Length: 140
Picture 1 (cartoon, rainbow, N blue to C red):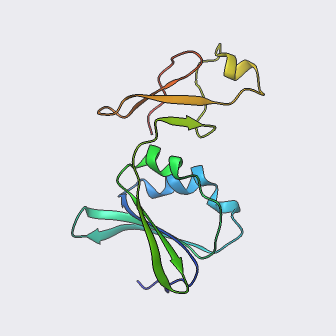
Picture 2: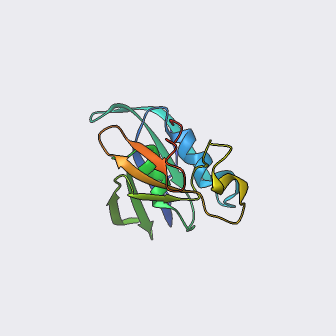
């Protein structure tokens, strides 16, 4: 399989196999208005298997989404066909409006104007809790 190189855009690499689609959905890439290539289960010397997302265009991107779904992924910024920046992504301490609280009695669920805020409580277990009611975030 061959996917052309991009001149100006973003490559999200080193995504754990099977997590690429979740990143695609949470970033809203279906509505980005630019070409997006998703490769899944690509052979990787480092990970065994990985997913890759290539975005052919410059779009705003919430890196916290990537850090929440798959810390350890990398984001490569391409300009003029050359790699100009490589970002190693880690788990964010705070997530805002990325996921929703599953507690139906949470104030963020009943008061629509409040942001959905989750705080990292346990890095080792990748556990986030709602800032309003302390409900544990649903798994990915």
